[in-house]
Length: 252
Ligand code: 9D3
Image (cartoon, rainbow, N blue to C red; front, side, top):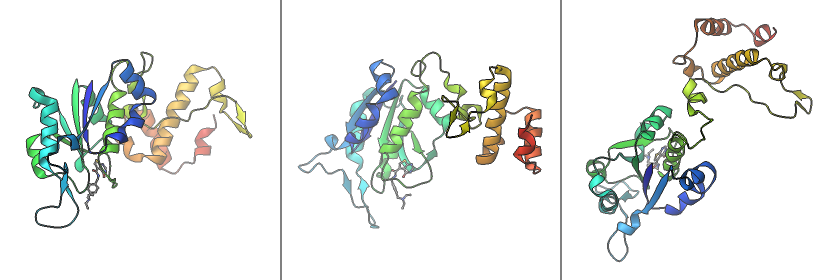
């Protein structure tokens, strides 16, 4: 996949893209990220990229010409075939389903909003989708663009290695993860649950499943409505809802 990023702060992308899985995905040819400085497409002695809004109101607005010139010159004839995504607080909320959809494209373009936002004509001329990563206020679209790149890249077949199926992870099963442990088996008096040392893979799988459901019930009950659960599992949740304590269900 090739991702073209349009930003006023290209240096922000260096660190995250040059480490770990994103770095390896680029080295191995699964991912190509091209960072474009919108300022390079601004004209005039001062290469101005933002101006105060018509009608007043304070703050600054990103000018239309540099952004449209940048996107048109990089995408060329492919404009119209490639999703051009504006990162903005006004966008649709990003989630795993959106990540999976975007991972199906061979190319994406991401425009990072800054200041109070972009001139509305950017939307009319080049933007096909708008994404927000959540209901909190950031300083611009750069960190959100990195979030999108990260979430999409790990879904590209081969990036996580053949042994790892990304659909095993929590937001794909619809549940939070069960508790994980590794050596040592005891640390400061805290023991790893015996079941995990038992070697009984059937029991381990049942314990993990129940823990995942329990954790989701405690922390993210909203996820349970759409999680794929058996009738038996729904009955177990109903007992928890009815006020049964965990000590009553923990003992075997
Ligand atoms: C007073 C109205 N503000 C909107 C909440 C103005 C405003 C604040 C922050 C306009 C832009 C920004 C910068 N944020 C982004 O560009 C942004 C963002 C975010 O702030 N939260 C979650 N996702 C995103 S994607 C882009």
